Image 1 (cartoon, rainbow, N blue to C red):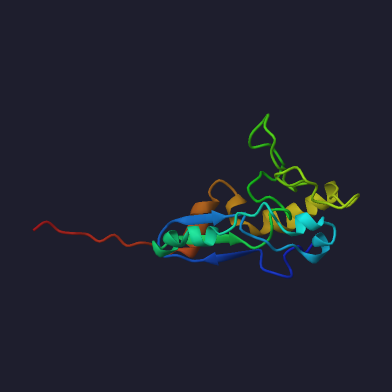
Image 2: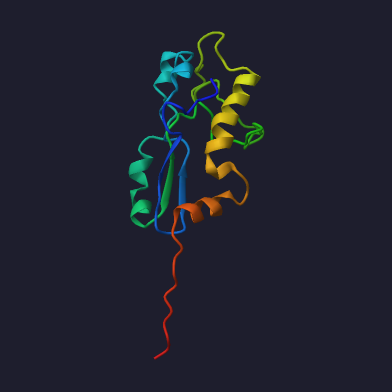
Length: 160
């Protein structure tokens, strides 16, 4: 189970023309077969997906923004959480790096099928760390933008 994204690319990148990157980590619905077989029927419907963001951000694409869209469900690994699973909102009920239940508190996994520490570490290594560019380091977003966006040339105007 180390090749979580082997069946499908982990993200789709639309390279824009302006230095703006829109990251959509929760639009993915793909569940690798090895994971899907461990999930409840409800979880396989991926109810916690951010549906239709591709349509919502059409304006950004038209403006020249680069769009980075996850293909895999947040149930594989939550790309908007720190890899050490630190809570983003201490004291509040939040999902974890590898969620165990839906936002409605319904279990994701069949009895006895939840990931253990080694399984979570494998997902983090295979998907979160190695392929999702925005989590590389604090300077990653500018590096990603530089990689996918051509530099803008300023037009200089000379006074009259």
